[in-house]
Image (cartoon, rainbow, N blue to C red):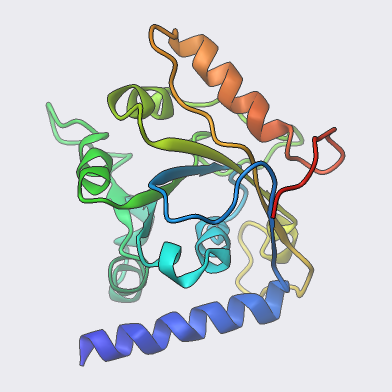
Length: 216
């Protein structure tokens, strides 16, 4: 019964998301191939990972798990059901990590199980006028631990205007999700250099940025 309910909710989430946002996926520099990846994106709304997850083809979607804050997604039964049963999210305790615990461990375990991940290296929603907040170091350590996994930058446009912070009623508006060229950790690369390279790759996908030719 729980599995059937989760399947019905999944269909409802996808249909609702597409109706409200008319979301379009744009693949620049890569194609939606069955390759294990870490999709890392800009973060301005609780719905960000929903949009990325929704535009993935079903075969990829079924193997892709968003990384999200446990403090938000464990608040109520409904939150937990959505996070764990529909999206199979990897929940990270950002507020009260256990002594000696490694916040990367759940993500490493998910990768080792063959999953791809959706994560937000800014660490929190960006409510400022800047395009991106500074990246946290987690994405560097994750890539260094699993250097064979492709890191794909993903720019989400307009979702913060569809569902502004603090609002519960979405405003219909066209959204785009742009996937950039993959990058990988380079042997010996320092954290600051990697974070700068990853951040630049994401910023290059923002509206108005100069880009090379489109793939797919």
